[in-house]
Structure formats: C-alpha cells, structure tokens
Length: 450
Image (cartoon, rainbow, N blue to C red):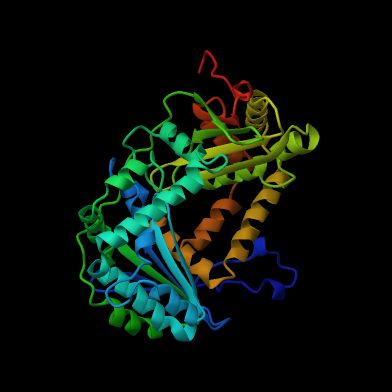
C-alpha cells in the first residue's frame, strides 16, 4: 500500500494535490461484533481513539426524536466504574482532550491523548459501552434532558437564523422521514422521553456489533489487539441493527418559505435534492458548490459581493448523507436588499454553467483546493481515525481514500455542467427567506408556476 505523504514541508516541489494518498491500516473484529481499525503513525507520541456508533437521528422514530443526541450527553455522565465527572477528569489529568458529536447518520466519541495513556481511553470507552445503564437513573436523565433542551433554545430557537435547518428539512422531506426532524429533537419528544424509552434505545444501538473503534497514532495493531480484547471482549453482542434504507425522494414542488427573525441582514437559502454520500455524482456536486461560492474567486462571490456589492457573504455546499443528499446555495444580503434579486442571480449563474461548462483551468483550481485541504486534514491522527470510520460506514471500505480522491481527479468540465443541469437548473427546490422582523417585503415570493 502506498505511504501517506503527510510531511508537506518536506515534499519539495510536489504540491499537495499531486500526492499519492493512502491511510495504511489493519482491521480485525472481536467475537462480539466490535470492528477495529488501526492506523500506525509514529510521527508523534500521541494516539486518537475514535468510536462511531451507527446510530443518529435518522434511526429514530416519530414521537421519539432527539434520543441519539441525548445519549451523546449521557455517555459523558458516568458508568458503572466511572463516577459522574470522572470521565473528563481522568482524561484531562492524562493530558487528553475528548468530545462527541451526533448527526442524522451516526454518533461519534473521541479522545486524543499521549500514546502511553491509550489503555485509559479504551477502559473508559468500554465501561460506558458495556456498563452505562448500571449507573443510569431518572435524576441523570432529567439533568441531561434539561441541558439538551437549553441547547435547542440556544442553537435553534434563539439564535440568529437558527430556525433555518429545522424549517428546511421539514419542508424537504415528508412527515415521518428520518431526515425531516432535527438532530436535537423536538421539545415535546424530549419532554415525553421516559427512562424506559432511553434504556431501550441504548440497548438497541450502543452495542459492540453496532460500533467501530478506529485508533490512529503511535501504536501498532499488534499492540492494540490484546488491549481491545481485554477491555471490550466481555461486552455481550446485541441484536443486529437494521440501517435505514429508503429510496431518494424527489422534491414534489418548489416551495417558498418566509421566516421573520431578530436579524439585520436578510438571508436567502435555496435547496435542491442531490444524491447520497459517495454516490457517483457526489464529487461533481461538491466541486459545483465550490465553483459557485467557495472563496473570492467563486462566481457568486465575485458577482454579488465584489462587483454588485449587494451581498455580505455567499455559501454553497452539497450535504450528502446515508439516505439522500441536498444541495444548498446561500446568500446573506446587505441590509434592506430584496432577496428576489439574489434568487435570480443564483439561478442565472447555474444557467451559465448549464449553457457553457467551466473551463479546464477553473475546474483545476477548484479540484486542487479540495485535494489540498483534504491531504492537509490527514496530517492529524484525529482526522485520520475519523476518516477511516467515515469510509467504513458510508462505503463499506475503510481503505476508500485513494478512490475518494480519484473521484475528483477524474472530473471533467462536462461532468460539472451535467450535474448543474440534472440536479439544479429548473428543478423543484425549497427556498427559505429569513428577513428582519416586519420586513417580509424583502422575501422571495412564490411564483404562479411554482
């Protein structure tokens, strides 16, 4: 396997984008179903421990939302052999940092610590995987429930533009679809959750056969395997978990939604249905988003921010997930700017690409930027461990990295033109206008043919 070239400063004239990239790794599986990926990187005496549980908000059910994110909090609050507060205290004493995150597709926990403290991280992760419920009670549930509710207030209900994604995804997907509700859940569902509800959720999803442990850093597979067997081997296998599997559903009709908010700058967000993570068109859609709005050389930035001076900022990204994908184009306008003009500009720039593909130089600039950022991201063991987990979850192959970059390197201007035509130009979409309170006249109005 090719060696990952991470020492960019020692590569002479070879740019990051020209490098051959791999993440050498070894995989093995315990009898209880826990899969383990080990990447050896002796460059520094640190190690990253990264656990992915294959459960996120997309595994929840209507009326029982927010559980995956709730457990992201609960798993830090003590288990059988780790009293509340000791998880963080022990890691901090060892010079470690740790955190977790939840998406619609997965829940992730990680520690980055000196390699001589690896056993501490493994013991802590194993204890909360196998013995969390022995320390679970109503008081702990209620405490974390209150914290999550407050997080929802801060990030969604009371944050500028905070209602955008909850509103958008409720419009993009039909009621009951696992992407139609926010990761944090609803206030009603969080309030209704019982101790039995959350314990059942934990027993279903937080089991070794529904988790992958990725370790990257100053260790070898030979060193890691007996430690993982010692700390995780006793945990019983759970029932097999069925991953959500739904067909990609088209947006049935264009919708225009107006939200009034305590903001000073009106903001337009246009969203089209795209495709799943690592699907054949995913890379071309990512490049299209960068071409439209990534950096000062992007088309929307040059037009709206630099030349016409009507926008404060532009953004675009292809949000691809396990079940589906959505392409976002966003313009934050100058004060009192009509968002209809921003909508026309976005549609016009998309139409230009449909009419004339980007030049080879423009495509090369964008792809080089994506590649360079990707390779530099792999300089850290933390990012490598997480990338290995991501590849295994979405593609079934932890060694997908070379094929991942090949997706971008093989793109042609015609590919970018085609995805602009097939996914965006003239297609149904959700258009969200967020305007200052009392200024709905700045919003994009629905048209007769929508």
